[in-house]
Image 1 (cartoon, rainbow, N blue to C red):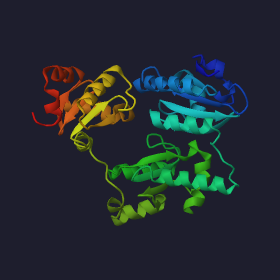
Image 2 (cartoon, rainbow, N blue to C red; image 1 turned 180 degrees about the horizontal axis):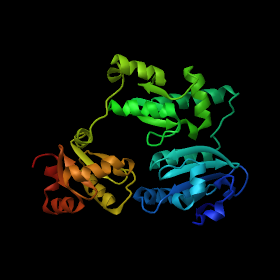
Image 3 (tube, rainbow, N blue to C red; image 1 turned 135 degrees about the vertical axis):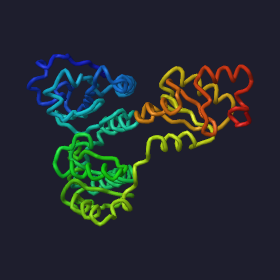
Length: 332
């Protein structure tokens, strides 16, 4: 039966463990360990996601581990932020996920639970699957950095220098910790014919390592090659104007993740007006920034033509007064 276990807070209990995977039920079963902290609201949200996954994947063992209560284990596995998820099979770590990314957690659980985590490198099918995965990773953002560690905590001097250069030039980039996935770490060397890390990609094309980036910086070309980071205020303006009617909520149209979001979706759906949504649980910067930008402290938040309408209470008042449809159509 599936487990949603909260491990003892005592570091002594875990001292000497080769891996949290010792908690697994049987050979080959998947163990997902959530390193969390009680002060982080995103951890509580991801615990809810794990609880739902536990019901769906009864063969998987889900474990919660308070990161700060077990410093030795957290240090052993490089846990520098919460939430972080580690995936184990046969007492071996097979994958990692940093951050509150519910869709990605779901995908990883589904993939590993199905036994599709590490295809044999010798098979043609395995190579094809890996190449497809690598292609998706290097195209995951306009500017992708494959490095040792994370931008907040680089784990080698070259990666640290690379991050400092990119930040100094205000370059917007996402990163992948090659320590978190040995298959990617080795496979990307062959895929790109580049034997060392860090590696920087722009629009899916390899730019190079630290030496190349230093050369581009010295020549003044770096600013033209890499995309600039968008200021938060500009990003928020772009998001609230993404569609004529924009709803910032917890979850999505298909799966609301709080009662208020569920109610507002039901009300808007009843009008038949087209709208788009943004899941604020997926982006902490937007979640906090929009509260200040709009001077509205709670979610959901509804916008029409870039202007804030309000939250659930306002939408209910507009519905009851018969004004909601004209407002959504931009007639008021």
